[in-house]
Length: 244
Image (cartoon, rainbow, N blue to C red; front, side, top):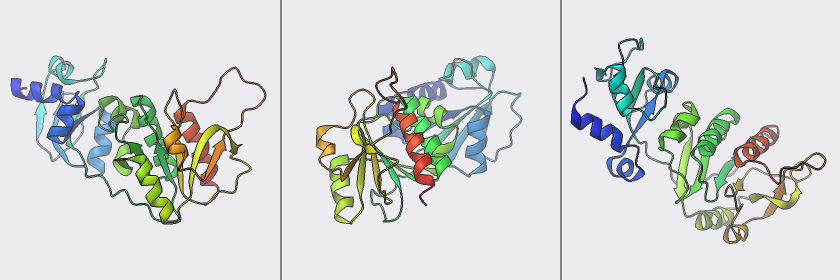
């Protein structure tokens, strides 16, 4: 049974400010919670209905379906919710020889979650975001990752300063734009690939740090003016996976 204090705590974690202050977040559903437990992620407590058949050594509170609805962010809650600790982010230092995706003012939770899932699939271990991009621990982001956030280092930093720093270390910086050279014709070396905001693309400030602009060319004359940022990330990730 849930206490009022627990309900207040879990509901408060829908807000970025409270998540940041407490260093906590929630993850929901059998698939994601199962991944957390399998990978020994720092879980503080599990809240589950009696028909959840998972096994955990963490503190477990059995709750009713109605109680789960009170603390869930899903329209159709799925048996189990985990209260978790936010993990420490890695240092914003990138070694030569690795591919890193960076995002300038990413705003949509679904996009970030999908991008993290793409990065996990294609072996891109670091994702860099501007400080005011959507929060990794937003429940919609966590849900969209389907557990892939566990293995990806998501770094929030001043992107312009970060790019200048990596360039000093001889790491190339590319950016996806509509004015760039076809990515299929460019000679690419492992480095940073920057993607822009969903509506306005890469800012002029960040463009100043690019060594080259890359275009994902269309076939024919599409009605669409551009690709969704997560779709762009998938196309680029698929290409560079064959360059290793």
